[in-house]
Image (tube, rainbow, N blue to C red; front, side, top):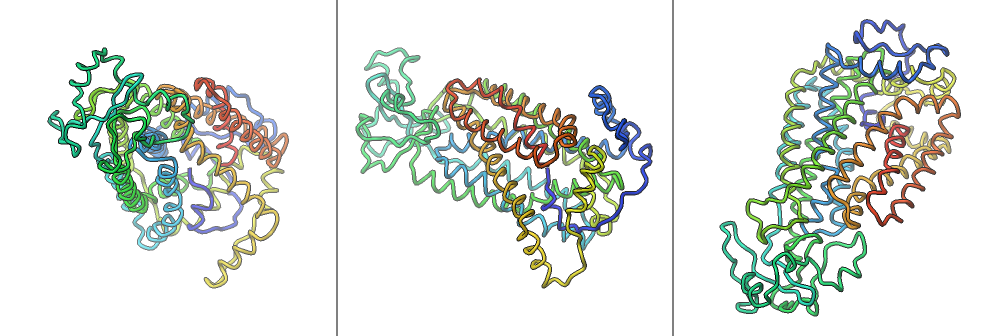
Length: 515
């Protein structure tokens, strides 16, 4: 979901909402009256309204686009940090690769918005950005470090063996006879194969701390490891692969460059889709949440299906170390992303962009009005009176006025709170599944947690405004902050990963409150 700040480049105009004739918007999308009696409609009425939101017309394409776009995103990116972890990267490297995206989007979205305004090519830029989403994301699956060795062993010894090449032949070893063949190891030790493969020495298993990755191989723990000849080696948890640390660092830099370039060209996709949807809604932006809700539905369903599929994705076309019951083939996620994003591209060809340069100037105001039909009139009026009025100023004074606005205690406090809550969202997005994997979680658990998360987000759509009307938006923000603290403490104390599910409903509520 795009925030007001990301769409502010489209301009801001203060205007009174026009008289409402909802029958002309979407035959089945009749929002609740702003009157007090009708505004307190039952949950059943709102549920019926949600089901009726799937209707014919231009807005159906917007719903379909959000569904496929966020389904594509949810099929891969919640798991991308675990994928980087499997490539031998540490938490800092994975965090940089995931966290650099919002910064690039923040910097590039206004550029693309201005370009769409100037040349009135919003649809063309949207389609181009979706193609970039597919091309640059799919390329990440082909950027992997070479694995020259595999780690095998039993309860008392750990050994390095040469990895297999793409044809299944043993790679040559720079240490000659010091590295053992897998078959030689099994025959000499006479150990059953199901007990021969331990991914870490017993001393490492006992001392393992969740979040620490990869494992740096130690000469004392590996029988035939010579750091002077082989260099520094690392091995990701839940894998038999062994990487050279220098190779992992090279791949990290290549991935970073690919992500930055890809995100720059992909950034305008959702911004332009939001602008198109709000233009279609016209003077009724309060219906925007019902379009965006289908994105949450797509994300949750895709993550749930992919999570179950990953639990059975144990076959690799050319795995250098053979079958590993704990290592997952994330090519499945990249394939699902490509298919779903291609569907979003096809749907985007049917989106109708009107006079983009003229209509986009009203987007920021429509974002501000998007929830007004669900909030008490006094609360809505308070938000309007507290909002700064835009004035026509010279470019030289524009940034000065912005800085003066944020220098006031009211807006600086709000900016700090949203910034701080963003830390929590980013932390959960990048490292929640990383942490759950370290304490024994599986992809099926990630999928189930995602379903609960997004069902709670949809449920918050029905209840959050009633709570805001009752206690006010400031107190609701307090509740969200306290819930954040409780949630993070709870996750840090977990020892059984399945106990994360009871608290997953909180994130959906928090996201909806912030938006």
